[in-house]
Image 1 (cartoon, rainbow, N blue to C red):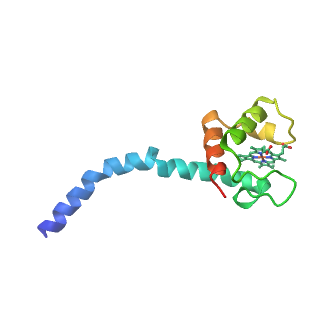
Image 2 (tube, rainbow, N blue to C red):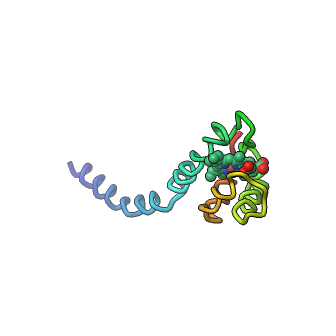
Image 3 (cartoon, protein in one colour):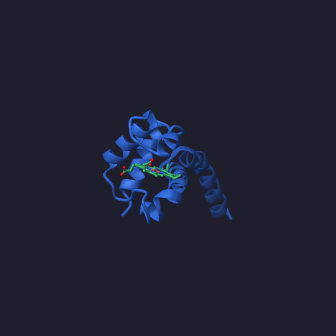
Length: 105
Ligand code: HEC
């Protein structure tokens, strides 16, 4: 019984740091990026591998993807839809999406 109680106390003591980790840690960041990336695959194909005319994103160079998205956002790149789409993304989200898709096979 003593053991169980001290275990429970130890678990409670860990809680604040666990919550902090969930709020801002890598796991949460990943989840958010994956949610954003899920909106891209409608056009760019499952896993970022295009099935049609839209360019594939998976495995592309990170800097290339990031530059392309910034140019789309600023209207410096010829696009049909991406310009309107990228306007809603922050620079940080663009960087994370570029990182995410460049790491897909
Ligand atoms: C409604 C369809 C659609 C959605 C959703 C979409 N894209 Fe695109 N994307 C395109 C099309 C079409 C192009 C080709 C350029 C153009 O016509 O706008 C493109 C081009 C790109 C390019 C340039 C690729 C290259 O090789 O030139 C990048 C990078 C890109 N998209 C990233 C994304 C990301 C990241 C998301 C999700 C946050 C996303 N796109 C969501 C349709 C879409």
